[in-house]
Image (cartoon, one colour):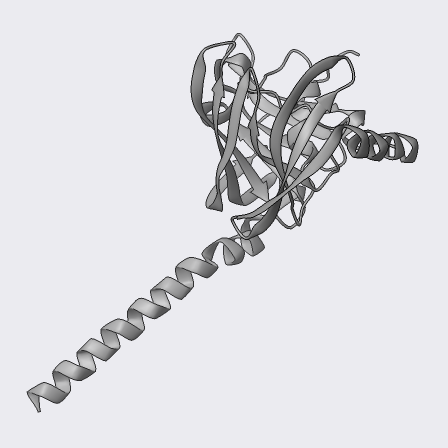
Length: 244
């Protein structure tokens, strides 16, 4: 009898563990269904892209974290782990697929504020997209090397430049969500900046994510893409209109 009870308890424990693991796996998805409420100023990001970088020019090393909502492609940047003191007045910045950026933080007097800006380059027109594709085919040549990065297939390219003899090796993957909110971060003015440049709207497509680059000035590699929930709440930050 004791042996049967022991076996039962072991099976029950293992079953409970499986349920807990299944719930943990599903948690980000289930949480998004209840937490993603843009109409109430609430944005729940289930995943995050984490890059390792070395900026040789500035002699800096570290990580950059970009929170992602894979469903809409909306992204979020936090002061603590992305732009740092370059955007010291802002707690977080939300970036949308249509080029809208929302900055939430405090002014010099400590009063909370929210500023909204539109970056047109994040939503390029047909002519710009055509030129971009031509430039990519001209300056980005595949080496033939491929690999898997977090379930996505990455391809190695050699990037050349119109006004330079330099060439850089890089890896690109195709994501199920658009990545221009990341590339467009470089284009926001006088707000914040990332420790390495992601200014690639001029040549990469909206679903072409840079996973690795090794150049004269920068070494960059995607370290992870995994569940890493973050809830950004914009309510409580009064809207402030900024003159053009």
